[in-house]
Length: 358
Image (tube, rainbow, N blue to C red; front, side, top):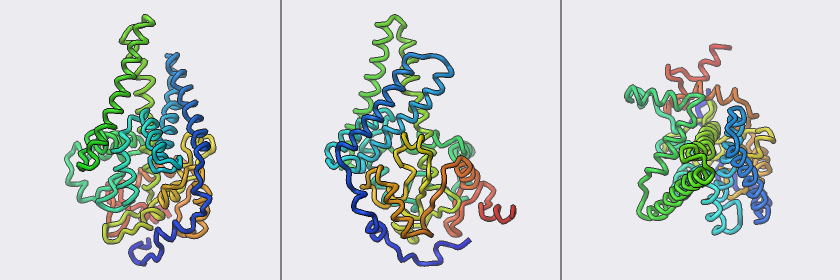
């Protein structure tokens, strides 16, 4: 394996931004509203269908659909939080807060962690907290319970647990922020809390008015709001994972990291089927989004083509497939920042295993 530290990269993030066509920044308000209305329509339909059925087969299908719909709203809110969905920053903030309510996200806390930390220090050791890998020494210093949790969270089925605990709970709900942001984050926490309380009160009121009782009304609340939210956590956790965790994506220590390495080389473009993209709004075309978050989601494919044409060797571009996700979760458990390789729990690198198979 060629150590990415052996050669000095001459590319800069500013250079990468400069090659993106000006047309990729156009974001007419009407276009954003049309995408927004379509996403809200699908979400409203899935909520209504969930409300009126208790059929187990239909519930499973509708839970997946609603989880995808919550993800769709969240991704549009994510675009708004970056100021890309509309020209008006005020409109972006108002719409962004509302769109993140079904995913129970605290807007300003998420903005601080995602926009200011993750995007500023992507794949940088000690800085980028999202799916930040442990070294073997750090892992062996954990308690048995902590090791067990790490194995669960970094498994193919643990992305939702990881996102729920490490991102939603630690970086939003119990986050202690700077004094400058503390009040705005507290306001957004209250906003989410009011949403939850109103949804509970509304479900109970409907249950009492219809004669089904408060207990059944709470079940309705759980199946309509909580179960899709849990599915959303797994969807978004796995999505963020595969954006930045791959056997051939290197993470970097502080002195060896650069913005270009983080935003171009440390990010992935994944070509997803058109049907799934109805919900994901090009979020898997992730390199141009990291190069410049101001690009509206519907222009990301065009920006990706410009970047790939300019940096064909640096761009990670993959077809959508569960195998790549499974392979990453199998091999990428710990990280050796000295050798710049991923390791499994036995200390083996994916490159060493590939050579052994060959």
